[in-house]
Image (cartoon, rainbow, N blue to C red; front, side, top):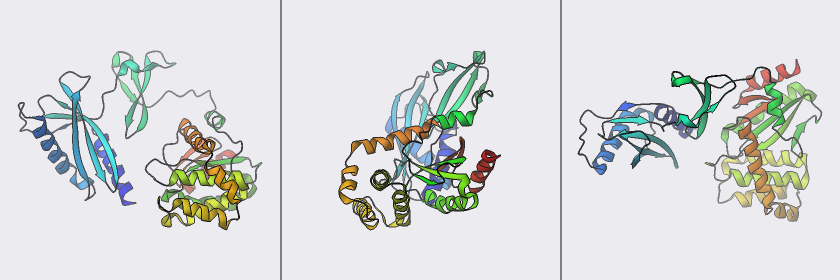
Length: 331
């Protein structure tokens, strides 16, 4: 999707840019209103080639930053119905900008390695681990890994496989846990890949479905709730048929017609209407969605589709990655 392409460009170019000179013509007596206007013009011109044509940039602020002689502000970039916030700081002369938020290294925690502490840098709502050496001489983008721990087992221990929709041999050696969003077009593209995996590996693999509706998809969460209710009301087979119905009709579903569509799918599959309706209203079902999302985040999920294959994390509809993880698990 074009908007997703622009989102990646914006976050990469703006959020990962640490500093820039805004203008050589700054005026220390410039008012905040004049400064905002100049900054907006600067950012629009500087990044015009990387922004969609309908993008609107608005600079908001200012407030005191924890760094001397700096103020915090924000660039709100709106396009295709979504808004991306890019925080930055500006020096009090209004000349120099630093894109990003300051990181308080006093909050870093000691690692098992003497003289190295750990923390994180948040970019576009995702946290990336960083390490800091003694006296702050070196900063390392990465994390400390205990090579004596079975990472795959540790990951699988965090994932609940109780009372979940399963496709394939329930006693298979390889478990593929899919974290997916019914409104996500890339998740839809993963379905034929998973079908081929099941065909190729037959009884050696099983697929478990977990809910991960993204907040920017307005009918994804209601779809998650409806699909859980298809499972709770009518079992595994009904869930996968319901799952397929949603994805087959993905382009026809809107927030406005979603309740009607989800009810129609249940009726077409002869799922008990009364039980299905009662399930939709059950707050425990909505809480289950929250739990599955939290579980996904605990094992490193931050996008859809993502898969955990016997503890090995695969991001995206990556057929080769899935097969490599399966082969590793079987050998």
